[in-house]
Image 1: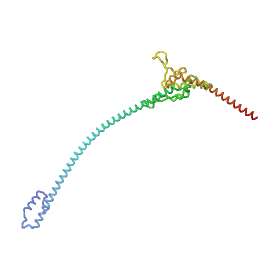
Image 2: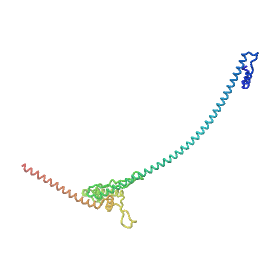
Image 3: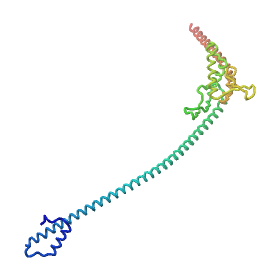
Image 4: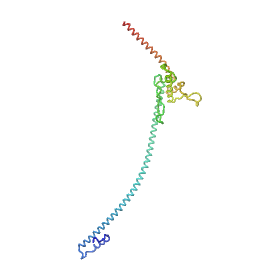
Length: 301
């Protein structure tokens, strides 16, 4: 019997209802009736179980599809939110970049102002030092007093920067200044009287070259007085114009070339007399020593 019934919910349900309403007949043994009823109940339970599994499977598939749909929607929402966040971050980044550039520009401006102020302070210090050096140079009275260096602005290592500098060939004191100017004119001190004309010519050219370098370094130019201002020409440095260049050059340093010439000539005149007096004193000393030695010899005899 359990193999002939179709597994249909309708059939099984009807059989269960009939079995419940129909009492066992007198001809049917009680055990068969019970067995038949249990079989019908087992079939009914299995059928309901299959139905429940089918329904659960359908619900599970439905829930899974709903989850997949929700997941798709959430993925779409997340992608949308990610794009919005990326756009927002890019916008914020652009704004921050703009602010940082603005701040960098301000810092650069502040640094430039500080650099300008430092340059101005440096310029003021050097100019005050130049003024003090010019004042001290104007008070020089002795030939071996050192000359205070005057600095001027010259292009530095960078093309847009200038540095204060003095020329390395500036004479150390007034004696060197006097000697430089006189040698450039072909006038040499007494110690040069025994030297050859070639040596003197070489020394003269060297002095002229040094004066030319100093004049170019300190922007010294001499203009002719002939004709109008528009027709004035630059006077070249040569033996005849050395005094003109030395006057302008020393005036730039706070000194007077005519005073240097006067002191130098006096110094050169005093030197031979001092040398002659020294030689005379040495001779007198030697004569005195001879007399003393002679007197001692006579006493010994």
